[in-house]
Length: 435
Image (cartoon, rainbow, N blue to C red; front, side, top):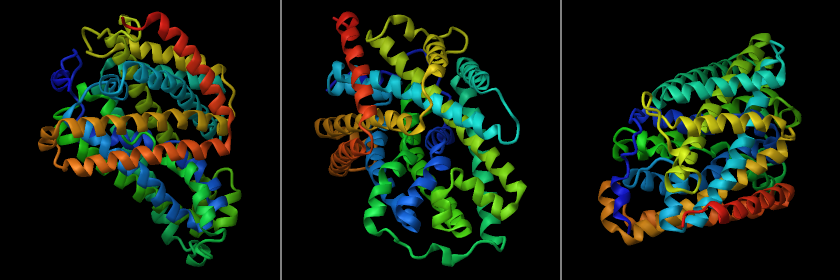
């Protein structure tokens, strides 16, 4: 086992992300546009059984989160989703995962910026592409100024989002419009409807592990990473269930399933015009913090690839004053700006984002399995036995592969597009790979 990894945290980056920064990063990446867009379609498939489907959808991420928590606690490093596969599977596999993630991250940033401008335009008309560009520029500046600044922004927006969701649920459940009978029949389409909703709902938890990508910038990772991921998963499940119960009891499954803006429609019924403004504010907060989280994770992945020679060494440059990977941050800004030319078909983009994420999760589970079996002594710093970590890694990896297969039945086109992108990356890697 490569023992150098234990001490590989001296890369010039500043350790300024605490426990609540870890939580804010995880929730910030996960609780984004999906809750506002997936809820209606999942209700159409599962009815009120959506509530069961949310819990089931959290299970794969719970097992995968154990693998991430183990690796992030005992072997922290920036750009972890690239660095761990590079060291414990193969550099070529690591490059492939990171290369696919480049396409996925560009797509995710474009989705978030697009939905953000559309929500804001409900109350304040905005020019779509210029508004998206300004959002990218703001997060570029925040990330160059320091991960501490970006993490503070993330924590502030996360607190604001939870407050707005809390107001929606409180007023929705107590305002007299909520009716328990609208939760029945609970399984109008049977268990097949619940299963059909899972590929949509699993996206609600993508990114919950995001803080591990900033391993070199986390304060005392042995005490913050595992608790931070656990708190993030539990909070996400609780918030999603509360929002779903409130929306179902206000609109009922048929109306909620047919709605293009399900949470907005539910809030408007409960609170009138105030509800629309509340949901627009919540959507804006959720989307902005997701963009901020993705920006941080994406740039650290490019930084790690530059450090190892998988990309030009310039990507690993650290700003002498702010201790941030400024070249990698600028590259993300340029790539996101170029993404403004992409088509805006959301279903296609969601799958194109999800597939590389599941491939990444599978690889991290393999890494955790190999490290756990080869280095039993590392578990002393984690607090969970080797057998538990091994089984969670195996189950998480199998579930990730199963979800990749299920997604192909939904739409094959993202798989083809990512295949072409992968071939381009393979050709380039043969030219610039480290010798």
